[in-house]
Length: 136
Image 1: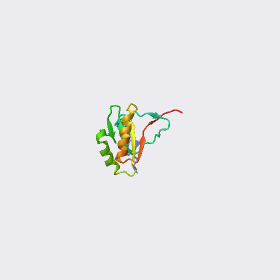
Image 2 (image 1 turned 30 degrees about the horizontal axis):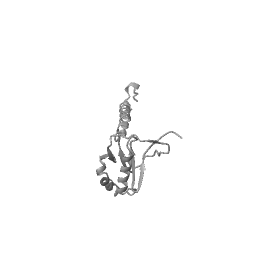
Image 3 (image 1 turned 90 degrees about the horizontal axis):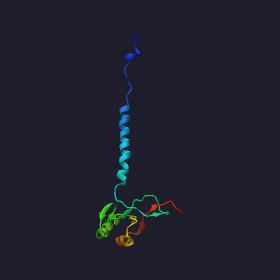
Image 4 (image 1 turned 45 degrees about the vertical axis):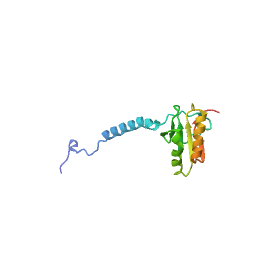
């Protein structure tokens, strides 16, 4: 019977160090880039309210920015084309709720104008978005 020395053994283990390195690098890349992707979009500083609901909703949104730009679901549109575009969105929706994201510096008249256009377009429920503030 032939005996093998310890040095003559075939290494049958898989080296997972390179796999671990690649996985950690990908994790770091995703951790760095995800906030940039999610934060992209429309820059609206919402007013604060203590009773604001912090749960995100999947509804039709109108956004009014500080630069007086109007967005419908992240697509820039003006007040002129807002009603027609809203009508197109609302005819495919069961829940005809429209959420208004207005920057806190936007004039009250512009907010009322956007709400009026949404109502004319067929919105059944209107909501104004606000940030949750820590207060009494």
